Image 1 (cartoon, rainbow, N blue to C red):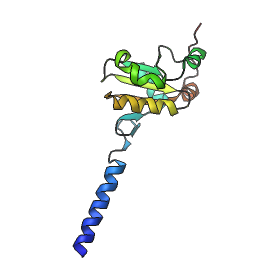
Image 2: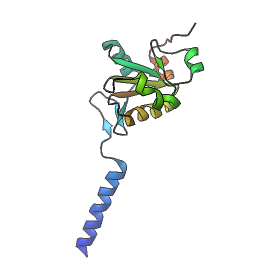
Image 3: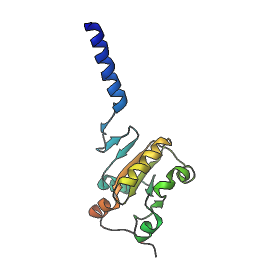
Length: 143
């Protein structure tokens, strides 16, 4: 009887680990690894990446009208609802660093997860443009 209880307990623990995933936590870069597939970073960390390399894609996943009101310089507009269809042609290097943002962080998380599911290996979600403005303080507007 005790042997059966131990087996049931072990199976319960393994099932819980399987359902919840085992690899979450903090990366060596300081960002939180989410869904075992993309990383949540701060606006400050995103700015550091942008300042230290040219090998990244900056993706704004808001809608066109939001983008026109102001966006981060050189950001590529791919609304989050279109990311699955457009990523293959517009983000051709699946190993390139991809920095994703939206207004508040909800849509960027969805887009980052979608990109990871499509096989992109270096996706970093830095949340909303509001966080960027708090840190950097400026945007580019369409004329």
